Image: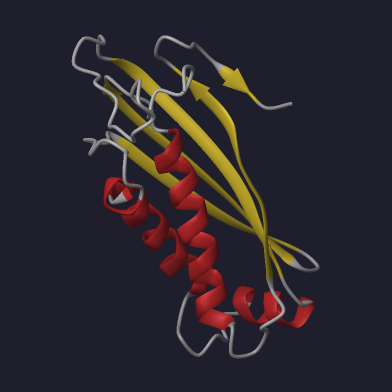
Length: 157
């Protein structure tokens, strides 16, 4: 199974050994969105959700999720993150756009942390207003930028 760093020569799952890699600044950004009924978005923007401030809670959930990625994804390294930002922006008539950026100086990248932050923030939006809109869709979660490390930079087009 050559080419896949999370498998050994016999095809068994393994955690990648990063001990010989130099510590470099690494940054990753991911995006996604939650699409909903226009009435649901209006309720969120106007602060009428029964569970509270949807965007503030989802922002905190995303930050917390980035910090706990190694607990959720089996072969991810536990990391000391330097910075996590999660932005949720309502876009009329029917969606909340989510962007997370994660940064550290270390021996491995933070792509999974950024993707996890967006995913959990989106799930939190869904959870907080699902009673009024079970038809919401979580869409297009993707890595949009990464820099640092041996493989260099990546920017989605």
